[in-house]
Image (cartoon, rainbow, N blue to C red; front, side, top):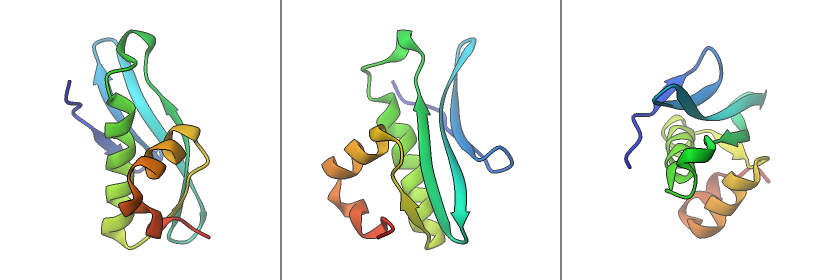
Length: 93
């Protein structure tokens, strides 16, 4: 299932409508040009379909396009980056 992901910069989140529910990944800006990707939620009925990976990829692609760095506070983000080392250089030390 391919998500239609929306980046809501006012609420600091990437989300995708799923019927009456939403999948989302939230973030904060602890420093200028640094996103802390801190929380990912997929409704139970939609789990284990790769949807979290799509949200994380959207967030990391935004970080990369902006020339930012990120902090993987969410375990889902951390696991994704371990499986996709091309994003590791964007991680804040």
